[in-house]
Image: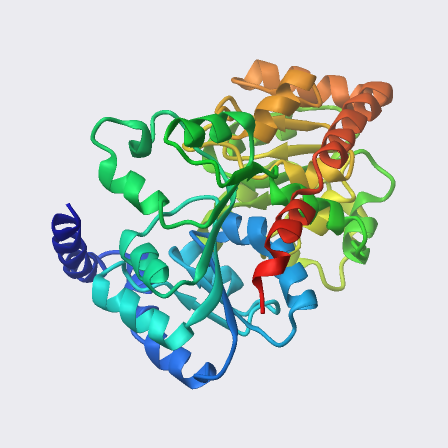
Length: 413
């Protein structure tokens, strides 16, 4: 099976080169991997001690960040290497301040895995949430690098738990320890005979709790808000925006709106702005302007949404009308804000829990959106009640990082 897998990986490496001719994203995927080994050789010496974190994309990086920060503080003599599989993670976080080296992960061929690990020679390795690359995992096992899965999630429909999943189950045997998010993941692994595991929870809770300790002030948002009830719309997609724009254009409520779209391509930002009939301004147009005069602010930049949530009275988190579903609701939740999402949230345990607890409301159509916004805008007590549910939920689920660090602390030289 490994032989067939390696043939498929070699074919895939040629196929993505062809696809790169037609897709800018896949071009980033291909071009970004061309200098990985050169970068590693220039930044890591043979005598360096290293710790490697692998994240599929941006969400997994954010999930692993609390552990990275603890590792960096407690083991300052080790170099931290971060790899990404996806351009959407690497391109946003390639200049992060936590790692010593950040690169794309070369495709999982045997030769790539051997060369990568010869250069990085990690003492400790963390795969975040998922992504199980057999050649890398096999080589790590041969080199006695201690390998962990953190914030892991397992589901019955994964190949590990199917009759044909022996190849994938073998990949799991290379891990020294599993830190999983919930009881169901623990039971699934135990059904395969794994007992080297612990329920640690989700490290994202620790990350968003830490957000409360930093300075989240943004003067231009304070000026725009001007003591008015403000709805922050984060990571919105066109399907979200079609409903939201209809509401913004029709409502007579005394409220302001901040929209931070998932995609900030200029043509799509301009199309969004043109669709709104109320007085609207872009982030890029804000200088030398009295922002308090405007009803809608469109954020055509990245990196400040979390701070913007701290000014929200209500949050709408986008993605819930597409697949795989809603974006990160924990960032607004940590600020004690009631949240509205679309119907597709079942793949995200925190969203399922908060919808069940009624701190988060799920809507499926224009009428439900209108009712949810109107009720929350007009009733401050309901806003505070649902916001309190959200902030309490976050606080009650923190602590995963401490569990992980306590378990691994004896394994770092």
